[in-house]
Amino acid sequence: MKPQNLCGFYKIRTGFEFRFMASMSLFILSMEAHAGTNVKSQFSHFAGGFVLTLLLMYVVGLLIHKYKPKALVIGIWISMIFVLIDQALDFMERGKFLGQVIDFLSHAAGTFLAGYMMRNKGAQLSGGMDNQHQTVLNDALLIGKGTKRKCYQHPDDPMLCIKVSSGKGLRSAKRETRYLKLLHRRGKSVSQIADYKGVARTNIGDGDVFEMVRDYDGSVSKNIEHYLRLGDATITAKILDAIEALRRYLLTESILFSDLSLANILVKVSENGDYKLIIIDGVGDNNHIQFLEYQRWLGVKRCIRKWAGFVRNVERKFPQVAKEIRPFVS
Ligand SMILES: Nc1ncnc2c1ncn2[C@@H]1O[C@H](COP(=O)(O)OP(=O)(O)O)[C@@H](O)[C@H]1O
Ligand SMILES: [Mg+2]
Image (tube, rainbow, N blue to C red; front, side, top):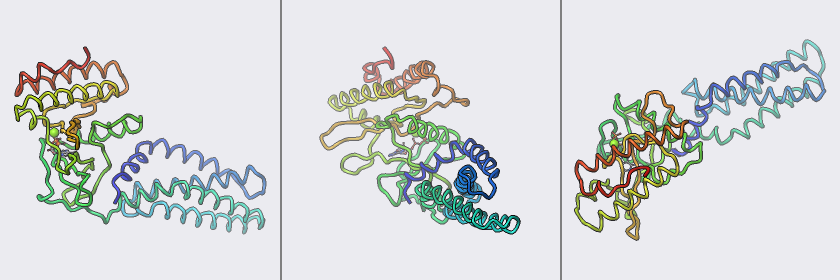
């Protein structure tokens, strides 16, 4: 299973209502077609085959969980069976053999074009939402525990982790993944955020797949608190530089965050000893009605407050360090 593909599946879901309505309208329009050899009629049949295949793929893929992996193939088959019956009935009624054959071929061309264009999505559906594939997690794979989620190493890929939320954490997890998908759609850099890769079905419930933050030597990166606790002046200075780089990144990319803390930021150490901070939890707008992501100035205002909250979080344990952190916008 390729978790990246799961993300693609989510993209399908995002605009589902809109696509469904658009496809439905096109399909209804295409029903206007009658047997005939004129271009308009053929285009209509072509569009009918194309749209019907897409519609079937979406409907089967989204509504009938069991058949998700085969949604595209099922879409193609039903579309072809539909046109065969439709044209046979038309032929019996009107007897225009050539016209029916051409209509059939136009519909088939539309069907196969849709199949060709959606071949990757089809693979995503089959790879991503394979109902049979259940990732088995156990305590040996547990990496860390927060207040809302447990984080496990992905058993198939050490560079990924799976976070399984407790009941009360489900909503905030959904908000976070929604926001990360939005960042992707907007083409923003996620270079300092553990990237979201999709969903995974596990033996302990559905989880979210994220990039695992690891140091150059393969060990799971430790959080800021770990490094500040060492009380080493050089390391502390490096952490402060890294915090400043993180602030600039968040500001430049206009990334919203709500829950930054010493525990939610990991320090990725590279081979040459550089530190790069990666946020693992707390990006996005945690308001119940999310509007900040559309309003840059409100977003910045909120980030100023939230960054001050982060500085207070540092201050509680490391007052001297907190003094060195610049405000979000000065
Ligand atoms: N992407 C990641 N890479 C490495 N470790 C992680 C990652 N995400 C989470 N963890 C570990 O799991 C713990 C809990 O994850 P977190 O997302 O902070 O849960 P919560 O939302 O409950 O606070 C973290 O404190 C950290 O130790
Ligand atoms: Mg956390």
